[in-house]
Length: 467
Image 1 (cartoon, rainbow, N blue to C red):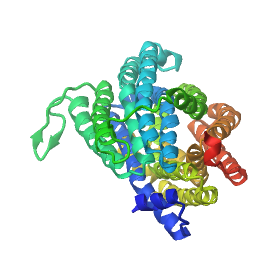
Image 2: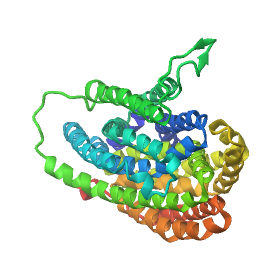
Image 3: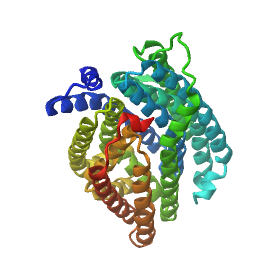
Image 4: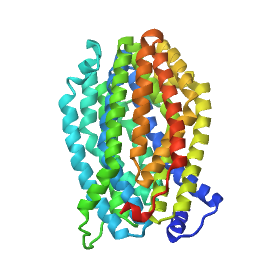
């Protein structure tokens, strides 16, 4: 089992390359399925809303970049605590790891409530700021407002799942996220369409007919259920992290300082990269509702290809974090390159599949022929950048495990603002949405290359340096 290998790592045992790869794969597979389930939820929302028409699709597409920004910033603080959980477990400081769990969850909840209130406050003005047409503003506001109110549940779900993963338990978060996907299908079917619109086995299903608002509400409800179960398995059932009566460590101030040190670069990265996505939406908006909808659908379609990379990155954060906590510098470096190599290999394969099946993927998401044709073109442009995208994604996970989040912040932001956005702004008026995706593919290629260079030059961090 992957947990056995992690224990060997903590105990100082030297693992063979085969054992290390086995550990990486066993940790990665559940995380990959969990990430894929997240994309599946986006597919479900996009596909169901796509049946309502191009304007409804454009309404969600208009605010999608801002939902990523809000979600990324809200969840960023959780990373600072989850990484500390991995370090504490790796150092066999289990009581301290449980203190980090309790303090982290309460802090993340408070921060998420603040971001949620801010997001709800701007929801009415957001579609206007983004340049959306009058015909899609009301639905865009509805979707973003409901999404914003669910941010605290999203943050707690992310934090609890990350803490379970960093303890070596990748299976439970994976199962729960897949369950969330199933619930999303059910809730969306009942909330988006009016009664009698959907049929299963000849039986007409009831429906609320809420349209775009129903898509947001269905996703929010599924997140609530998943969050409650995730907290149950973390606080009640987890062998290492469950709540118990024991004296407090009294180290909250140092935990918070360390969490901010780790999370602040991630938060800044999410603010600036999310802001860049919002600017990208502004670049796409003048191209019309078809381009907005196509861009949103294509990003969703591509997600199925890069989610395996994020799954491996989650595994690498847990693995590298415990290795650093155990002060295993040689193993840390070797595991870093093995995880990145595996990620690049997997996403090279998904990139090939993306190129081949791009038309079919767009047909699932939208019945509109224009969206299908344009979406297939831009996805095939992006397919060539997938191996380098993998290098960036998994290397960022490695650096998170080491507690070095500033590196990924600098590389992602510099390439986003110096390469992608200027080139997209130049090409979009000339060759339309294709230009935006050419800029994206070039930026990802450069960014991935720089991540590989940074990883090769990085000096390993020992346990004592993290104090």
